[in-house]
Length: 281
View 1 (cartoon, rainbow, N blue to C red):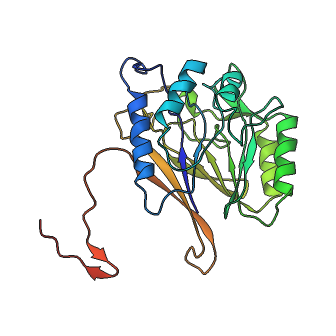
View 2: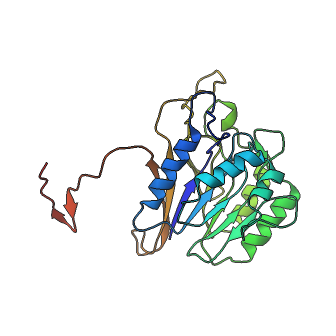
């Protein structure tokens, strides 16, 4: 199973530039091209929030136009820049979008790993949180398949990054209760999130947490005494989660990679099937 995670695409209106500088639509097109070029092909793509920079129907229509050539099925959950009502309407034609209820959480089944997608948005706030209703839903969903390896996906990381900017703040409500639920369900092999615009990982509630890089503008790794949030000219990237039947010890496991987006030229083969490749260049 190959799950590609994209996050924080921050699509503007057609022709618009984020902060007057960043062509987030072009960045997303590069991500689509990279995903379509993967061999073996991706089984699914999960967007972990902030599809649009401002969650309007026009922005979501533009998003869907950009990804219309994506070959793998797309799933998505909202981030703090998204608008629930416009988000729900934009994906009302999909099988995964909830038809009722206040929250846009859902479950992806049918693959080697089950993916439980959580809505962590607190309207009008940058950080996220979990209320009793959302915690109960997650606990119930995890209880339905205790033997199935599971990824829990949300927009806001439930663990600290050490960064000082506002977007590094994860959950401000329900984090302890979330950790308690995850500890009761050891089939959770990974927590995946977005929001922080750069990749990092941490152990949380007895499992591994992984924050994916953004497809558009990365944030700088700023950990000093000042609360600074800066954009840095590092390459955007996506995440690739591979479920391996043998992860090295004769047991299955999940491996997570980051794949930078850009024109790096073709790979330079050194070995193929264990044999040296003689370069003619």
